[in-house]
Image (cartoon, rainbow, N blue to C red; front, side):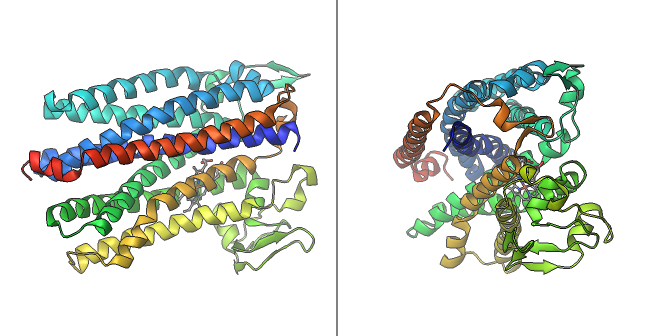
Length: 443
Ligand code: HEM
């Protein structure tokens, strides 16, 4: 591997690890807010217990999200100095504003964690709303740099010099709103499904304690309901993102769909593997005309194929599989949510069968996997560009060397950190079982 590959592997691993905590840091506060709101409305203590316990978990996750985010920021500067020169001059606004968003989130998080019992109901809700707004704003601001990389605006590079800088134009680049919405709603969806996973797991492990079962069943249903709603919204915003690719990054859409030849009435390829030699996708199910329609709402829309672009500017062909994986998981989780809802609310069954609970335990990990697929697809699908059609990744990588060793060391650090998070969460919740909360709240 050369320095470029090591630098991409190192940064990709850091982001892949950080994104787990960053996404949950956006999704779980929404679940805390909903539990708090239901508690204030119904005075059902189960929801107050949920809000408190999820807040404890959120505090641990935030404790990892902050240092890994800092590592990512440092690596940006060290690994990609040429890119950071552009970001520093053109796109520093999101980073500057993000400091305030983070301040709001951290401040209200501390208040809610340490003083929730002493706050009035209204203040409790204001505190959690502020956490949700702070966390979502942080995510929107930072991912706006990614949006800018795909649809750069507000500057020119003339003879290697950055000129005509318009920071607000760069900030409100064409992809700003669509990227922000896809990222935030997919994080809400993931936070909800992680809650559903844990609740389903606890129901599977329950040994006849009815009160505990009922509490977890409520958490499961809330998770499936919120996850289901946001899966639908994620699919809609994903469709919008794909239409944006058609207009502004057509080679990424061609890669995602394994489309080699430019054509109208283009088919949508599900599954299979793009084969450059035969210029086709092997083993795919093709839906005639569907890609043209999805790209621009008309069957005769002309969709550009990969052959339209120089070979060395094609994205890697495996992004087709990542794209399929993301969309497939999104669809599957809508089915999960519908199944849970029908079982409990339509068929009015008190207990969930084991097989269904086992299925539900996979919801959270699958959603996280879709987030990973989404990011790898979006970022490798932009290659070879770090800033679309303006700056190549190979031009901005550091020349310092010895990145291979750093990659191995950070990889080990993330494994240890990941294991430590699981250990701390397990230790805390084992020492403070839900039965204890049920006793003290007289539920
Ligand atoms: C269900 C149908 C879905 C469609 C059609 C879809 C479509 C897309 C598209 C086209 C992109 C690339 C955007 C770009 O490069 O500018 C993308 C990126 C992404 N997707 Fe999806 N997606 C779907 C589901 C999901 C699900 C279920 C998740 C996670 C739970 C998810 C998470 C992401 C993330 C994190 C990114 C990277 C950020 C971004 O570029 O927007 N997506 N998606």
